[in-house]
Image (cartoon, rainbow, N blue to C red):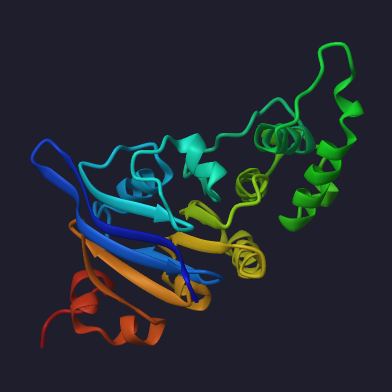
Length: 249
C-alpha cells in the first residue's frame, strides 16, 4: 500500500525541550496506524505539526504525495487531511445536524445565501445526514450538541472531521474520558472507518489500540523508539520498559 502520510526528521522544540526529535513516519493507505507513548512523549505536538496548527522547526511532511510542510491547516484539509481534537470544538447551542451542515459547507465550496433559508441548501443537509449515520448519530440529529452525552459528543467530533471526506483522519485521543460502553462504541466506529479512510490514532487505551491498529509507532521523549505490527510492539523489550510498565530483568 502506498503511503498517505510521510514525515522525515520532523522537529519541534519549546525552549530547551525537544517535543519531537527527528520523527520519521509512514502511514499506509487504508490502515489504522496508532501513535502511542507516555505523557509528555510528544504525541499531541506531532499531531499539531501534521495538522498544520504547529509550525515545525525542521523536517518535511508529505500528504498524499504533496509537500505540505509549510502549508496552513486549511490547505492540508484540501489535500485530504482532517483532524479531531481532544477538546470539544462543536457549537453547543446548535443541533447535531446543523453542526454537521456547517462542517460540510465549510469544505464543499457551497455557501448559504443571505436571502434564502438555510434548508434550501438540500445537498448540504443530505451529506450531513449521511455523516450522522456514519458516526451513529442518525437518531440524534435534532438534539443540541450540549445535550449529548460525552461519548456522543466525541462521535460528533469525528463526524465534523469526516465532513471534509478526508483521505487521512487524525484522531487525537477520541476515547478520553469515556466509560466502558462508550469506548466500545467508539472502537466499533473507528474500525468501520478503515473502509473509507486512513486513520492515524493517538490513544492511551491500550486495549483499544491493540484491537484496532494495523501498525503502531511508539514515541518516547519525542523520538520514535519502535514501529511495527501490534505483536512486534507488544514483544519489544524497549517498549515494555519505556511505556508498558515492564522493568529490565
